[in-house]
Length: 242
Ligand SMILES: [Zn+2]
Image (cartoon, rainbow, N blue to C red; front, side):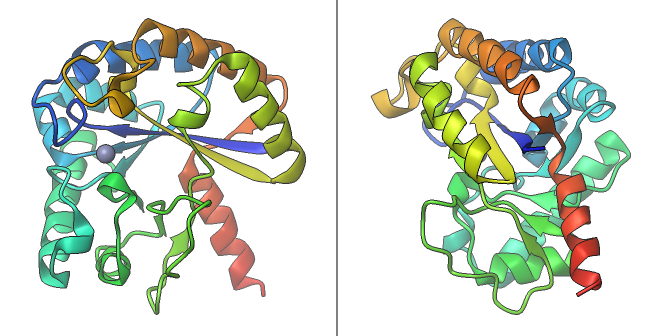
């Protein structure tokens, strides 16, 4: 059966353009409700800063969903030194462990911007998979790092921000042609965003939440949802038998 990994980047509103947290205050609880309604277990890539600011919400979410790491303060990894990347990953990991009691094994770089140093840092910090690439862009590979790369198939622009009729056509194609589809969105997309560039704020809020509800209802009849961690562990087990 076709599998879907539903992933969410959990952070402040449209970083680095805004410094508000409506996506956490309003969007995140609404997101958890709609996931619970459809019994979907998701993977939440949380920044350390978010976990520190909303510890109760993140702890509660970690009981049902996988918590991955999304940096500490939404740093751009591709412009940082290897040493700085490692320090940030280590610090963010410690914060997430302290708040959830669980060790994250998956990472997504802010703005999908990782480089080969990121993967080495992840391996040294004990991570098993990275999800910092989008599948429609060329891969730089993961170099010599011993981690699994699970690219994103569909960012929200292709399923939350366009009419449902259109996204259903895209979905039919993915369900028919791919064993696993990775969806990604942001918590702040479920709140009407103002004051940012058009590409970030259009079709956010109620309309995105309605489309998400409809999409999950549709996908529950066609696919099986699995957290990324389980998909990565299956890949790891399969590679050991090769
Ligand atoms: Zn992000």
